[in-house]
Image (cartoon, rainbow, N blue to C red; front, side):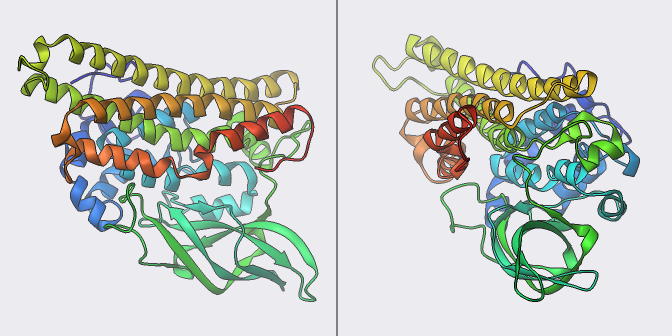
Length: 415
């Protein structure tokens, strides 16, 4: 089976305490056969099993971005993305669920204050799906807010410990107070049964359920203004930077959010490469004479292109994430501003990686043979998962590229 350029040299089972980044990636690689075996079960379940969840807990996957001050590993965003790619290579839907649940430790670590972080991270692994499209309503009350509403597409909800939702907020006299993000613990919301099975074409294992909150009290320290995309760093950064002195927690969100999604698509591309390689080794060519595919020139051309696309996509994604980290480090060292425009432009970079990954899956699906389009085949699943991603607002390239241009010309942001 083909090895990614970013796979560690060894994939043997490592210990479960404080694994290094490469050991975490290796653990994710080791889980690949089990994730693939469970693909159908997980799609019906709408998420991943308790056993896989326990594997993620034991390995420390959920703690990768959690601050060290609160028991986390506080590794880099690129380390988190590499693990996400490997989990997604086993099942893109499971990868989506994991990434979108665990990744919001970055947002909590960046924007919430010390009291909130002590509470949210202090109970162990933090798994907090988020929904930033405003919904519901929050009303200020003594010591906090009363929050009611339903938020859809809360990916990673199955094993969530909390949910992060954005709501328009009002005073007791109905004066508008703007948008705020609220961190709500699991006892105060209901995960609705509206995901999994054949409800969607793909990403069925992503546990992208809706969550419902009914008149929950949210204390003031678990609410923050929602200005994540365009906040000013100035000389102090964010509350999280002041607390941890790590420029990862400067909280520029556009590159990271898109990198999370794109990691699943690169995982899907590698999964399609693996399936195509297996078919090359076991099937005859479709064109006469019916040579083994390994003896047919067209299959080597296709497979070589698949490798080039998957390798390029992963290189581009990680380069974008690492340049993002470098901009934060430069702000810390010199005070040079890390601007929303720079964040938006790096979002464009990682979206280019997504297009390469999607191209790889589409070529693999088109050239693998009609049997790979049958319901239940691995290639059919990867094609469906990519098709689902293509409906996401972040995959509407012309809209997001337009936002980059608006940043450049200082015009109001529309997306």
